[in-house]
Length: 136
Image (cartoon, rainbow, N blue to C red; front, side):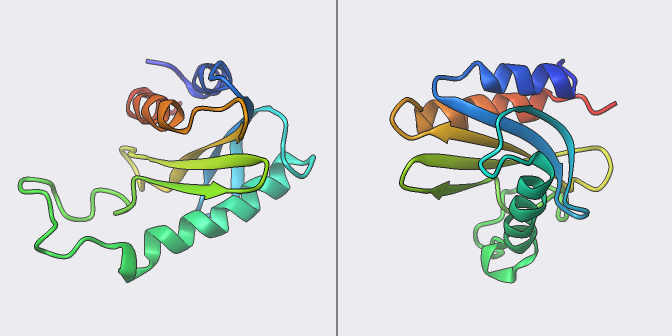
């Protein structure tokens, strides 16, 4: 089970990966970073992406209705959103929420080049990384 640095290095191995970070969306702080940042500063990127993650995690519009709830899944076991995808003219930003043993307020952010990246592969790989991530 990889730690933060190993997880981010594995994310950077994806085709088209330009940058990756593990971010605490409650504080907006980067817990770890790799590669480049879209604005040249990982802390600024972390704070900005945390705003998106916080909105998605806290807005009732994204919470599953009782009809959509997964049977046997505990209520309040993390954000109702699995991931967010923001598409720009030159890239993709994939934010994958990470379930933790504490308050589940972290997400993986992967920045992909649009021409070289594979969005489906990135989503699949980030899901696996998020499930295996060990926060120390």
